[in-house]
Structures are given as C-alpha cells and as structure tokens.
Length: 384
Image: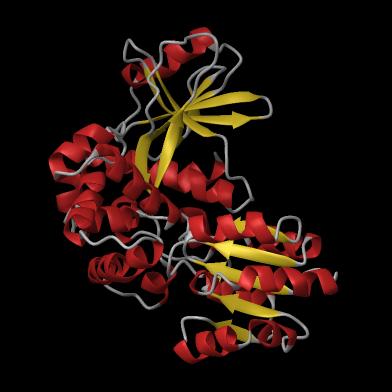
C-alpha cells in the first residue's frame, strides 16, 4: 500500500473535529485512506442502491445505529445526510467519529458550510504526487513517463495501461458525474469543452473564445468550467498583483490536476509523441504546477498559488505566497541551464529584490545562479 502524504494532516484533523470530510477526484484513494484512518469502524457506501434506500427510508435511525461512527462514502448522493448528521454530532461531542468522502467539491462544501460548520474538518485528496511515488519506490526516474501516466493510484498499484484507463475514466465522468452535478443535456458540447481546455492547458483562460469555438454562450462556459473545477478535473491559477503594477492581466490560467488525463485528452500515448508535441512545454509546466499544488494540499494548504503577467508581457509562471514573501518559479522545458532562460526572474527581482526565484527545468542538476536565483531539476520539485 502506498503511504499517502496527507495522512499526518488527516490524523490531526480527526483530533480537532467530530467529523472529517475528504473530497477529491474519483479514484484518488479517498476510500482506502478513510478506512485506514478509521480502521475497525463500519464502512457505508452510498453508491450502493440498497444502502441509499435504507438511509432515505429513515435517515435519523440509520445514523443513530452507527454508535461509534463510520466511514460514509460518496455522501454527495444523499445530501439529506448533512442536517441529520448535525443532530448526531451535537449529541456526541467526541472527536474523530465520522469520515465523509465525496467526489464533488461544490456539493459537499456547500452542505458542510451550511450544516457542519465547526463540527467537520475539510481536506482534499488528489492523485499521487511525484513525492509520494518516489517515497513508495515506484519507477519515477523518467519525466515523460511520469507525465503520461499521471498519478491515479489504481494505475500504479495494478500496472495498468494508463491511456486505456483514462479513456474509461473520462467516459464515466461525462456520462455519470456531470449529470449528478448538473443536468447537462448537451453532453457533446460539454465533452468538446473538456478537450478544448486540454488544448489550452497552461494558457490564460478566454471564456469568450471557448464559447465561440463550441457554439454556446460564455456564461455557459463559465458554469461548465465551474463543474470541471468542482469535480477536480481542472483548477484555475489566479494572477498575482500588488500596488506595484495595476496594469496586469486579470484572467486566470487553466491547468489539469492530472497530466495523465491531460495527455489522454490530447491523444498523446507515447514519450516520442509527447516530446514532439508543439505545446509540450505547456504540459511540463502543468505537471510542475500540479505537483506543487499536490504537495501543498497534502499539508492542508489550499491557497497561495498565483501567476504573474503584466501588460508588457513579462511573466512568471508561478508565484508562491510564503510567510517571508512571494517566491517566483519559472518553468522551462529545456534540459540545459541557460542564462537566457532567467530573464523573467531577473525582471521580477528588480521589483521584488527580497523575493527568491527558482528556474525549474528538465535537466538533472540543481545549483545556485546567484544569491536570489537558482536552477532546480524537476527531480527536486518536492523540495519547492
């Protein structure tokens, strides 16, 4: 079994709250983690029609019978559970009674904020990070293989064909999960949006342009991208700004949580195909930013990632807000160190002289360029 990096944070939350809600994409390992955390307690899966029916028949009695707590899986299927669980938790003040899991952030967060505020902690479990796979001694020394395979645990545990697995995942997601979140009747257009988002990964999101290409209005695009966010397919990186430069780009950039899924949407099946792909640099950038996001999420940090771009086109791929100030990360697909690649970081350092800067690249060596700028190999991304 692969040890998940979020384990310590989850155990801490169980000591602080009466219940813990773990969200994340389907097949990210939520059930396995939850059952390990509450080992010995009952496991309830609401995707089982008979279990769902038993609960709906008598919600209060159903929960009262779980005297010592339980793992409640895929609770977004029974949104009525939250107000009934509130009553149960108010009667039982002990910590760490229940773990609730779900694969839709919007539905769960809305219900928790309304019914379980102060009673439940909230964590997100994403697919395996490079750091987790390295710690588990999985074969992770080939960057292109890492990007193509992605981080869904089942693929690694059972040594599956990632491209075939992802094709089934996409089909299941579109046909089932999307309809559960929102009754989208035009699944063809929605599917086209997912593929267009893949071709724009790492780029500034232009909702009007996407709407034009699909043949729908921009409000629908905004709503559908919200669904992709809520179900952990994509995330948006907002622009970083302060009073130094008010004339900055204000639109977010779009990224995929898992590059294996991204590559499948782009029909990239081999290392050769990935290397020759015109936007391979954008895919490498996506992989790096997604890895940094996973590592922070595993520590319970869900904010503090931005990008910078001003009206002159000066850009930094990633800004990480830290206690000692913003850290700039520039990402290049080059395999060799080249000072020409540092122009963005040098521009940034003029306006943020106390801010550190790192160039992440596909080479093997990590070394310091000067006091404020360093080269970092992709292999050391878990240290950023």
